[in-house]
Length: 146
Image (cartoon, rainbow, N blue to C red; front, top):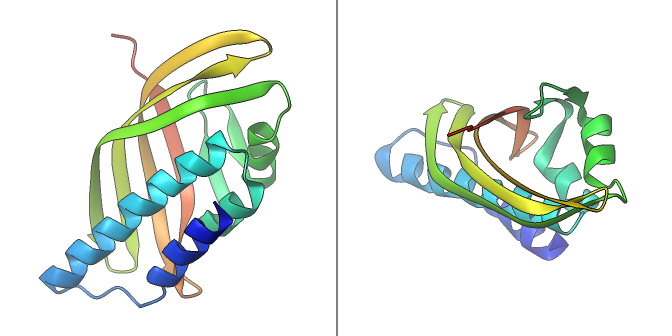
């Protein structure tokens, strides 16, 4: 997993440009980073997440919990949480210079504190191109109840 994330980050090492072909390439990179985030969470790969997330991350979970990066990383590595699958769908990337907003729907299943769970929600992530790579600076998710 670490190698995959390192490859994605090195792939993102070129400053984003705004011509059409580069916009499409940056959009593809951001979608790949979103999927790498899911894989890292599934495997509790804290090193990979550390590379994807900005040191000043602000994360708002589906239940309204507000977390900084340290709290989010602790929640991912909690021994009572066992995500089996996290999948994104209907993602869209909007580029704004060195910033990007990614929206989509996620499905997650696993066990927490010994009880199975299944969630479906919408998310919005804000990515900033800084230090020669894309890093997520804010993330928010909302459960879909219907």
